[in-house]
Image (cartoon, rainbow, N blue to C red):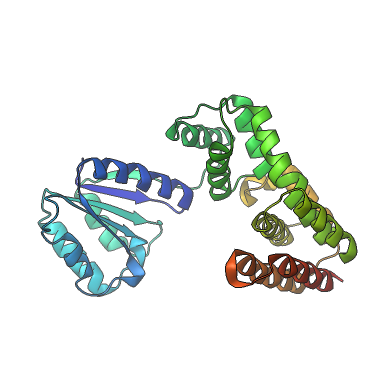
Amino acid sequence: MNAIYLILGSESALADRAVTKLLGQVKEESAEITSLFASEVLPGDISDALSPSLFSERRALVLRDLQDLTEEGKEELSTLLEGLDPTITLILLHKGGVKGKALLDQIKKLKPEIIPCDPLKKESEKEDFLRNLFLDGGRKPTPGAITALISAMGNDLAELTSAVSQLMSDTAGAIDEAAVNKYHQGRIETTGFDVADAALSGPTPAALLVLRQALATGTDPVMVTSAIASSLRSLAKVSGVSRGAKSFELAGQLGMAPWQIDKARRQLSSWSPAAIARAVKAIALADAQVKGAATDPIYALERALAEIGAARS
């Protein structure tokens, strides 16, 4: 492997995929791996991670958010870069921009393998990203499956990555449009997002009824909070743009499909910025509760819907 990899860009889903692939190669070399977040690095942490090991001849360091390194951390890494041991592999992540530019320039002079991770703007780039995710997992999707997944989930790469992972886990055989539609109808759109639509648009009693129906058909409470949170994020995004702008013009800027923008605009008539903020707090609390912080996740969801209804009214 190359000694230094620089993962450069702000798109976390692309960066995570790059790190996963690189660590797979590092593990094949039986390297001892250390992962650090730059903001949490203390003096000596980087040196300790790269010091000789009794357990492996090769060492690897994954250092995330390089732009957040303290001055002490920058000096420590800079010194190590001047005489880098050939048995060491560095995987450095920087989100781009001018912060930490001097260190970044020093790294670039060492001719690392640079892996760009800038946000994807073209539809074809997002389709390629999804296709490669499936191929990484040993599954081959049809073009229709890719289109259906983007239509259902929008353009958020983190959410798309999660959807791909769940789809590969929950289905067998070919990944085609029918498989994607079956997954979303059974797990998200007909259940979690129905609850979200009712919570954001209709009276609270109606939303509670849809919630009960969703839970009765097997929808996981976590899927409900996820769907509501996603819908609230859409409201927040759309609330900050001009109402006169066309949805297809805003799609790339907001990372949403045009139909999602149109839907959020219809819902926004009942929402103020303060109401959206109050609803976000309510669903964040419910999400923590259904993931183990409360003994009764259904009651937690019902309280959240009541709070969201009160915020909207």
